[in-house]
Length: 166
Image 1 (cartoon, rainbow, N blue to C red):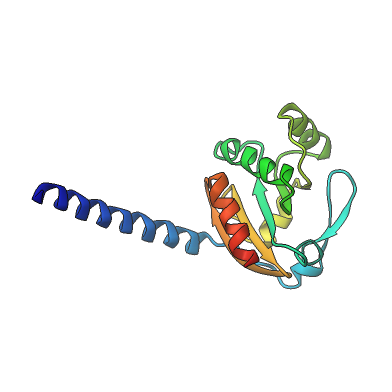
Image 2: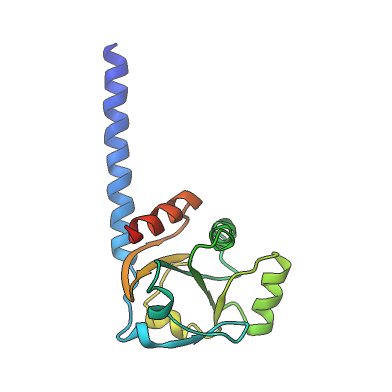
């Protein structure tokens, strides 16, 4: 019994260390929204013009910064696509993944239908100070309310969207 209690205590300490490290890394790598980002007009691959403020007015918006060359994005992007297919509010930004045609071909090869803003030179991502892919930003009513970097589970994204809408 004493051994079980010691293991439980050590497991709890390990869990706390992991949580502190995860939150610390998110805080250090958090993107910085550029001034007046909410009024900036962005154009998706299909030619639709959108603004983050407009898209986030009725329900929280997940903005997903990714790259076709990003290894971690291979695991995260299908979850983002599933959220979009379920009707969640999603906009993606393809960072330095080629021209519009190349990004569209990559999306077609992966059978993904996501709203994508192409950022071929990384200018938009630089405005946000994105240093890690993938980066997920939750915007509600034109304000950044949450962000995280690296791999995130489907349920982690869903929970973040739900929390932002509460």
